[in-house]
Length: 203
Image (cartoon, rainbow, N blue to C red; front, side, top):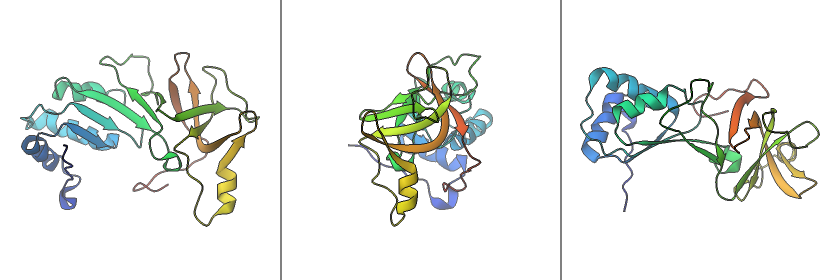
């Protein structure tokens, strides 16, 4: 079986503390926001304190993944797989994934959202709730088994954000995010429709 290792809250944002656990617990899977991975990379590039090469998978979600970050991680950890994940709380947190290649194309402006996870689906729709062609931006909607029933004690907001796609009968969640499909089936995240920000994990 596996073992869950959580940083001491007192040192939760201290890369030296994380490296201590990487070395002493032979951590195999890392899961955090990209900013923490960037802090780890910046610290280790100068300190070189990691002695364990047990890390095999880095998962990042919750924010943009800088295009330069995967390469920096691979310079520090041998044979590590890096996966970007995305989604919404209303869709059971993760709805999409992207396995970041060893070489990130120079013309990429960001790491793609990737493709829907099993039993999940993404729509990129225009203002008329019609599918946007590949490469054409639209609003991202999530469908599938992970969609929540709605907001507790807030019928008005539930009605606004959870809608039915008439032509399929599917129930969708409107993320308020912009995106577009590439012709290979990957989704590119393009930002918010509004000026919403996330502070301390809260929208």
